[in-house]
Structures are given as structure tokens and as C-alpha cells.
Length: 141
Image (cartoon, rainbow, N blue to C red; front, top):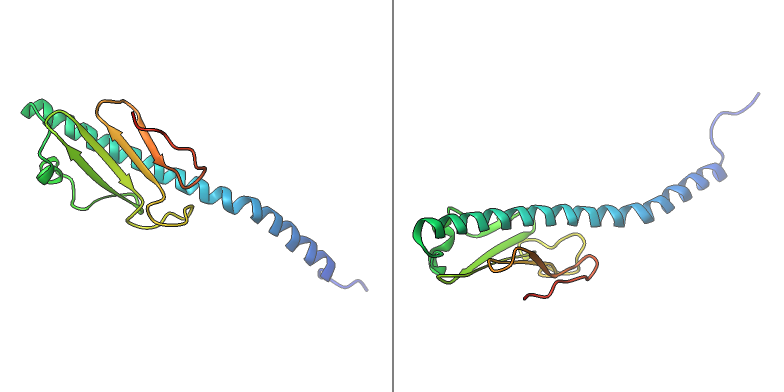
């Protein structure tokens, strides 16, 4: 009569295969989660930019730094996604929107503040000035 079940060697082979797959899958999953947060941050920046441009269209200038979030109808502190906190600095003719992962540390970074995004009204691009995943950064104009 044949015994049912798995031998120790069969179980060890399966555990080894699962371990090898996990070594490659987990880091890729963490990078993809960070990139999903990046998409959300870019969306928050675009929303703030649209609100700033609407304010400028209606008032002929950008709002004052002291009350910018309130005037734009944004919460204070201005948080986006689970990790990022934003800041908006304005003058009458320019603005700079900055988001940094200071609210909570990203799963793909060593420390809070390792990842930062900047948007300037004089440029159509969103700049990644600190990058915790692959180290590629954009230089501000």
C-alpha cells in the first residue's frame, strides 16, 4: 500500500522555489507601491496648480503665503496619499508647490523626507528632486 503525503525533500524544494520568487517579487511590489503614491502626489499637485491658476484668473494675482491653503479651499496641513505633506509658497506672480514624504516614511525609503516632488508655475514639468527608489532626480530650472 502506497503512503499519501509529501516527502521532506519535496517540501524543501517547494519552500526553496517560493523563497526565490519572494526575493524578486517583494522588492518589485514595494517599488510599485511607491510609484502608485507618486501618481497620487502628481494628481494632488495638479489639483493645487489648477486652484492657484483659478485664483489668479479671478483676482489678478496668486494668494498670499500666509493664508494660501485656506483661500484655495485646501486642508491645513495639506496631506496627500498616506505619506506626503505639501507646502505652497507664492508671490504675486509665481508659486512653488512642494510635497515631501514627511507625513509617514515610504516603504521604499530609508527615512522620512527621502522623497520630494516640486512644481513651479514657470515650468510645465513636475520635478522629482529627491528620489528614494532609484536615485534619479530632476534639477530645478
